[in-house]
Length: 582
Image 1 (cartoon, rainbow, N blue to C red):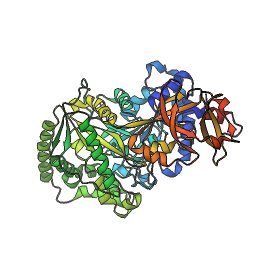
Image 2 (cartoon, rainbow, N blue to C red):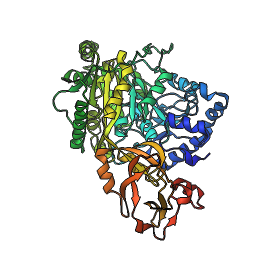
Image 3 (cartoon, helix red, strand yellow):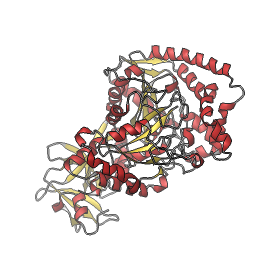
Image 4 (spheres, one colour):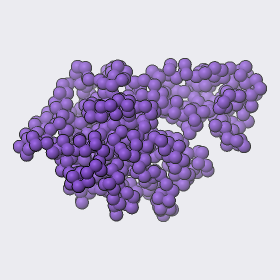
């Protein structure tokens, strides 16, 4: 057992398997998370960062629980800091607002009862008023892959905690896209159930009647695992509803927006190209596709924050803002106060609600036996661009997300390749609440359309190693551990830092441990040209007879290099070395 065996990609499945076979313990997983949080401190992921003293009671409690009877036994999760964890401060990213709750939010209580371990409170756009991840006095949360870009909000820290290996899943909230936009910008899955399906008791409200608790995960099936625990009526939550999942059924038709979409930002062209590739893959898959006019959805989106409905947000926070001058960030207060505009009268509110009811009926007709596919975001921004124009840039991020909760739709945001290196592209699938069970199977259909190539890595690109972010940055996803056929030798090349050299030999070889990753084919070319000589990409024969593209080394470079073959792999050699191999 070793903390070094804890995978960088924390998932429910990986952790449960690791616990079962004794590869590591929950204590070692938490130790790894604490170390990673310290490593990434400058990324501003946490408001209340992982700390052993706070987490220890949850670790100790595991000794009383049967892992077989508790499906989330030992699974670490992050909590957006507008969701209550008993005894831990809640700030909603506003220090003057802070308070310490006596009990858990309903969703947190259910997760802990299933054996999950809360590890910390994640950063967010203040009072959940933003989609950019830059509106926090605790610092701008950095994007997990490209720190110059925004991480997305408001659930910024929650998403980046998962992307950076500091939680297996993370709770966020979603009123206008906050549980989906950060997923798209950090290469994750963001699952938003139907309004009321997950209780919001214990959540600082943004727009109380449509707020949803959401989850960030690496794989859609992980969202289903969380949903099984937290879905269900909560008696003390007036907006909670009994919305059980029906039997999953595939959509009869896939809906796409007709005409061009308004892409924006410094990567507008790349985002548009990624969207066009996604559409073409869907068309080639044989699915029934129909284009529709999404103008009514965009009208509903505008109603959320550009009309009198925004007064709901002000109604919950007006007393605090009025009573604590200067406590909120200027941009936050400006946005909140839009809800107090004189023209937002009761009559105006009713007119907006009546129009919204009409659009909701249209949406129900369109989505009957169908799923709607849209880009999660039509672009992104640098943090510098958002600082220069904080309101307009933020508004553009919600163009394709704001309509969802107002129209009582369920949604799942999933990766759909990359727009550029280190720049994930994501799409969102929307369905009616009664068809929500079909969203995860439908999302697999989208993700399976991505053409991938299997890449074998044997050293610094493996999970937990320094160059793993290069793999994830090119959209690669860890698949499995494997070994080469017994005709290779492994060397430590005299480089700084030391690198592995895998050389095929005609005799005297051995099996060498490798990891197999699935990389989008569209990114593979860019990946290969980034590899410096004497390394390159060749065909590697695996022990089970398969072949995979992978790192190979020119034989001349191994002359005089340290032979690590006897260790059976780079990771074993690192453990055995007096000074660990970086």
